[in-house]
Amino acid sequence: AYAFGDEEPELAVPPLSPLSALRGDGLPQSVRRHIEAGSPVVAHNVAFELAIWNQIMVPHHAWPVLRPEQCHDTLAMAYAMGLPGALEDVAYALGLRFQKDTMGYNLMLRFARPWTRDPLKWMNSNPRFTVGGEKYTGAEGLARLHEYCRQDVRAGREVHSRLMPLSDKERRVWLMDYAINQRGVQIDVEATKAAVAMAEDMKVQLDREMAKVTGNVVQTCTAVQALKDWMAALGVEKGSIAKQEVVDLLPVLEESTNPNAGRIVRALRLRQEAAKASTAKFDVMSAQIDENGRLHNLYAYHGAS
Image 1 (spheres, rainbow, N blue to C red):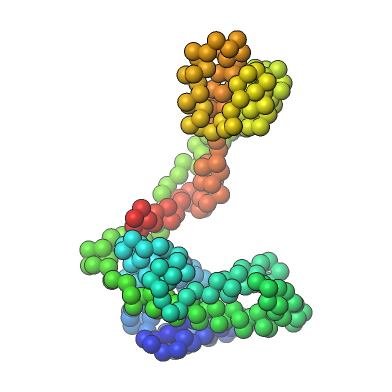
Image 2: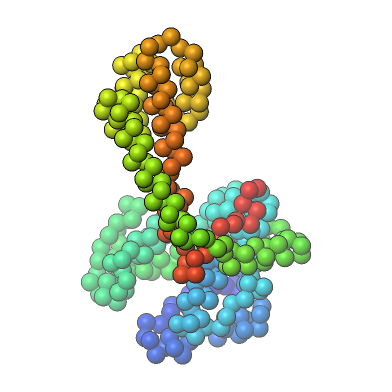
């Protein structure tokens, strides 16, 4: 969906025919001329538009290239003013007349599921489903989805009218931020895999030691309830053994006259070591790395504010 100025949003539906796609059908000529002339394009989180447009629509549907220099991002403008980032949140914070269609958003998620990948087949089967208490057929859902798309344009346009534009300097910073995110950060893939393997080995060793220290009562360092129960049986009851609670408890135990304090200290230190051996960050890196070993979109312009 798109709109020029204050016009009512229009809808452009991409062609399903491969031949039509190759000819670039589906993109209105007014939009094509606007893009080719380098005229400004405004969107909320325009990096998404740039990705879909240039990575999918340009190579597969013969659309003209959308250049970041002609794009203006209301998400960046909102962040620069210390406002929320999500379109529905910033529209609400500004008290705008047009709000994001949250029901349509939930409907969009339904349409994005794997069983809708063949849209014609799916629509012809006349599916019926419920979203937010409303019942839809496939055709009704698609019509509702189109209206959701138009409403996003209305909400985004009104948000844009209420935000301060970026200064020339900040605009250059935003463009540099986009370039950095596109270029990405090089990751040592082999070292990442090795770190995961080492951490997994360490977890096995720590779990084995935990079982030994607790007499097989606690089998793993992450078995929180079992560890609390074991400690309570030895005379130390704690409602929580989260990171800070453990840090505060250790010096107390080290000076305690409880004959089991030494074993409890050892078990808690094993839990601390196991937390250091987390592979969560390495797993995320491995999942998001590209074919060239780089991670992208790690930075959010003005995200900290």
